[in-house]
Length: 62
Image (cartoon, rainbow, N blue to C red; front, side):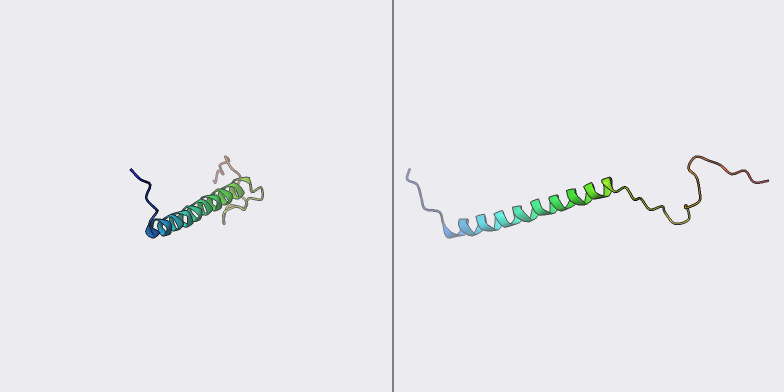
């Protein structure tokens, strides 16, 4: 069997596949960075309406 030359179609497909792979890798890195920033954020904002309520306490009304 002889080695055949690569057809031009294979070269275009390879280029397209590399481009899609790089875009996918970039998207994964973006999601990882966003997740890391959200997890390590220390200045948490409270939800509206919960600014004065304490966690784990109950208020008894008469």
